[in-house]
Image (cartoon, rainbow, N blue to C red; front, side, top):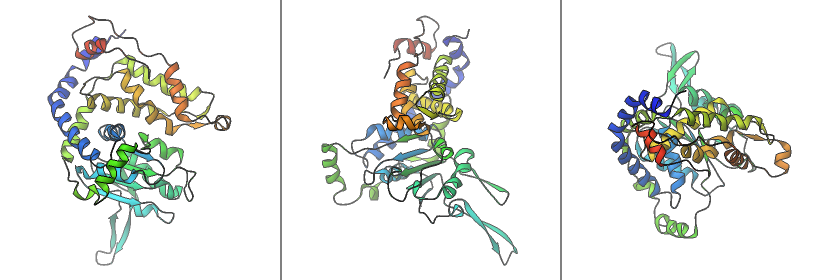
Length: 355
């Protein structure tokens, strides 16, 4: 049987690679976090999740009622990084070619010339994505999964890093289309900003009352720095018991009686990547069960479809994931003295806890 010490030994080079840039990661992340929090008042957990998705090479879905700062969060994150940014306002008459691009006949060259669409940027903001038709929404599927666009048989690579930050209003709102299951599954995590506390709202009046803080927001990190951080996150160590824990959580959604659609294998991969990014944001080069637990609702809930009976009983997907977290056994704390690996010793000092 593979022990934690064996795993740490095999991952030693990756851990050393992470350690060489760990200080840089912390400094860059803190600059970006501070920049975004200057705009989004009183929501540090939302900002942290956004950075987690960025470093995990995922895409973020921001869902909430109008007026709580969904687009403001997306813009603040994009402007805090010195990279190309495009914004797409999704409307019912938006066409797929408006997103991906189109080939136009050039009279002088007597050949077709490709005109790139708005998707050709490093950070793409999709505002009110569920106001466009499912046909237009599907134009994002290839881009979000394979980071490329295929037009007329020709494949075009998208820039790196590449992240889609989409906002949407609840599907009960007028003039919206529910996102298809395949589209929701492309998003690594979904976050709801929620209403601010009275103190935060009062502070918002002082900060936003005159001019928008976005007007003075300047980039605090370069695209190449983000690429280095993404590479460092890839080297974060995840022990076999924690991998199994993530698999067990996702598998439990596929057999739960209150769900007619469970999470996909892509969800397992996204959960693991997000846990690694969360560990890096906490200053660790190894993941804990806590990282998986803290992200399970954000990563899994938006992919699940409750049964009709569960909906009648007002059971939400978030409640089901919380129930699964309570029922699924947490990996046992590794025994002290297994080895000198940092992941094993530190995990022994910080036993996992249930949410």
